[in-house]
Length: 310
Ligand SMILES: [Zn+2]
Image (tube, rainbow, N blue to C red):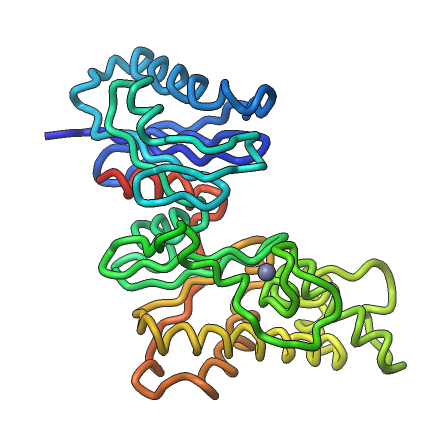
């Protein structure tokens, strides 16, 4: 019977590492630097060395460890192979195989947004469910879909890329993916800021947002202060995201939808705007879906990575 598992969330500047027991309690968590130079060749050896050192420090035998789960910021297939990960300096890499050889432990790798969804399902906002859609509203819009407790990774590792759903032909500018009209362009922190700036330019309505710099946070702060123009921005945001989520539920019919990322710090008021438009266009059988805020914050990744192994 295995007792322990590692969850490792690899980011562009730091690698977050967690040692868990199999019940999902964090025994220890720490960070190491992501060394992306020389094609990121040191990243996996650094992770292996940190994991081995932790086992030694805690006096844990390798045979008591179920394995090591790794989240990668980019597409990755079911076999744990990445085609390329520019953030880490990697070209094609067999992540699971290499890390397994370096540690002598079973290794499973997944996309970071997908594993975050798995983490929220296990110990976060969607605890107790096993059909979950998660959307992360940060600098971009990430997503993860869990069906029957398993990540939907897809054939190119691009499953759950909710941020790149096409929502509008008429959005100015282009998405980071090169397309035009992606959800990310209107529902990310940057997207909400853009919607607010467009609204400010289009009218001379008085608004708190006219003072100081506009951000997703100032928009929702203004909504809470009953600012009319900010509320119009929140309506537009809610319509885009709520309708997109209704479209997704018509395909995957989840029990819960979890919203995370920096923008979700606005709290339940954000859910109200999203849910209002979700209810307008969702398929009737999916009306009872539970909307929840993510609760694990930046730790969702390490939780999900650990769960992926178990
Ligand atoms: Zn896009």
